[in-house]
Image 1 (cartoon, rainbow, N blue to C red):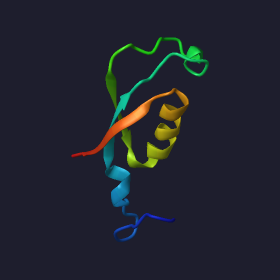
Image 2: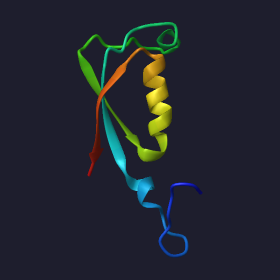
Image 3: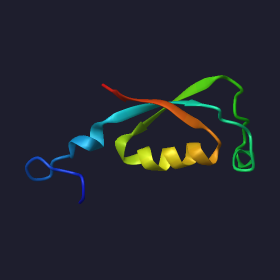
Length: 76
């Protein structure tokens, strides 16, 4: 698998355990968010925590919702 290394036999890659927190600004209600059963809150920014394996998917989702990623930080 590209970008992953294992330790010994049956080990877990170090990237699998990493968590990241996105600070997102500018999320707005649109056609994509209308599919949700809740509204997007109207605050300046919000924080979303995702594992390394889901970073790309979450970045694409934030972009579709009209948000801008202000900061990404490694947790732990």
